[in-house]
Amino acid sequence: MKKSILFTEASIGSLTLKNRTIRSAAFESMCPGNSPSPELLDYHRSVAAGGVGMTTVAYTAVTQSGLSFDRQLWMRQEIVPGLRQLTDTIHKEGAAASIQLGHCGNMSHKKICGETPVGACSGFNLYSPTFVRGLRKDELHCLAKAYGDAVRLAREAGFDAVEVHAGHGYLISQFLSPYTNHRKDEYGGSLANRMRFMDEVMEEVMKAAGHDIAVLVKMNMRDGFKGGMEIDECLQVGHRLVQDGAQALVLSGGFVSKAPMYVMRGSMPIKTMTHYMNCWWLKWGVRMAGHLMIPSIPFQEAYFLEDALRFREEIKNIPLVYVGGLVSKEMIDDVLNKGFEFVQMGRALLNEPGFVNRMKVEETARCNCKHSNYCIARMYTLDMACHQHIHEQLPIHLQKEIDKLEKNA
Image 1 (cartoon, helix red, strand yellow):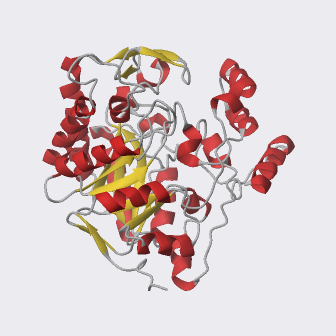
Image 2 (cartoon, one colour; image 1 turned 60 degrees about the horizontal axis):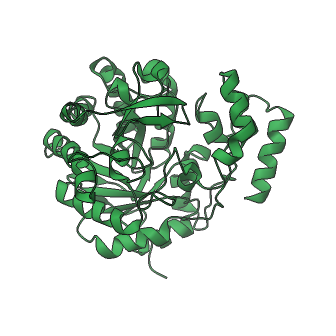
């Protein structure tokens, strides 16, 4: 058996992390008013104190039009002091701080983003539900520039790294995927054209990052459904991102508007999800059709590993970050020994913020996440929280649903 490299240093660009673990950009839903909150600070403090090499603040919109949720960060000058307090706290606990930057594209609603949602193309988003306006060519440069502006604000706020979100069916991914990109101009058609907006974003990001901000990019290895991108095209995207200057790739997959459980695996607890919803007609619709809209995909540990190994074979010259279903030290060591420089965890660190520290002393450490996805179902309305740690008593019908899902996981 190879010696574990989990607690050895490794670098992304000019940034060196104390170990190989990164808290993934799992959406916290802890930012009412689109601003950082004490709740967000306390959560990332707990993860940093728990031993992680770097913690990532999730899913920050680069413009107001990029917001999916009313409890989501929106990167702007007025929140920089609050973010600086957050990064100072993370640094005091011995971890590095990263922030994920993105734009939701068509995954929004006028009530949230303040305008008709925009995307690669016009259409209708069933999941909001809302009509979507296709972006004009003359708008794309300003939108790409917004990513660069967000990087500059991240530096001012004390972040060590940024993670550009180019996956999961959000805006960059909507340009990349033939499922959502039907444009007839130079931003549509061939893969080279569909990568054009991503290239322009990366040009602005790298210009803003300079030499003192590490740049990671989260990307899909597959979209996860027929008609979406498959691994061969995604490998070409990975190579292009290396050319564009990315210093690490975070290897993920799935489309939140089409194949959400391909991203997360397991089943969505529909009763739990609708219990927390505020909109009566959406609550009713999801309750009736949720299992059809959000089909289950069985969970298995390290569920993206087979595809990620294809990327490792072909992309040699930058660090690759494995994410997806890691809950035990044994599997984390296995992934690292297969050639990945870093691992990301989301739900494992929500369940146990101190899991990294425990892996230092327990060779067989395994977190107690039971894969019911209660945290995800709750996240759409309230903060992301593990049901094992909430203070309130769950209603009996929700507890029964969670128990059943955990039994079958």
